[in-house]
Image (tube, rainbow, N blue to C red; front, top):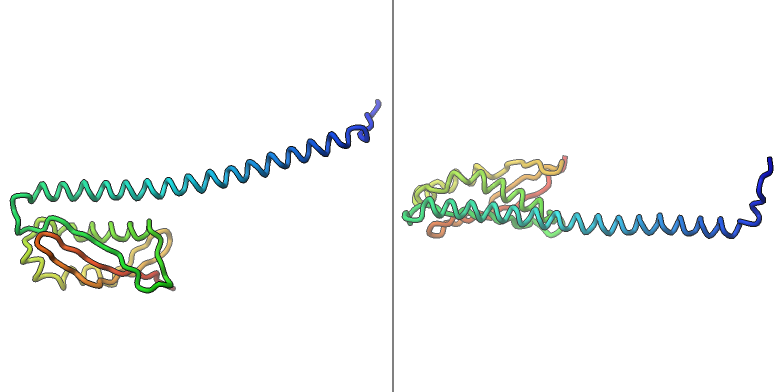
Length: 163
């Protein structure tokens, strides 16, 4: 059996190898850009879905108590960074805020005077509570609770627990 001489095809094989490696590198670069864009789109969609859920819940609560002006209609939660070194990502902030908001859901529909008198109780309900998100533990503390007419606003700080 005769073996063809590869010396004739040396330039053809090297150019084929170069083209093949270029295609592999190009596809890897394209895939990384596509994955980054998809991740950004997913985070944005998650943010909009959470905002949509919050707005629908607010509408339901307002419809439930629209004729009763002395009842709490809306609970707002704002996460403020404790210090500038430990910034928490936006999706984790939204998850912590929604968890706190769901815990304070029992306030909606109650009389504003009762909520005003029981503010230390709600503060103790939230303070020093540990939330586990994305395999990390976060400890929440209440900075302030403000009751303005029918809206309860809570400012909190969260810090990652170091073990």
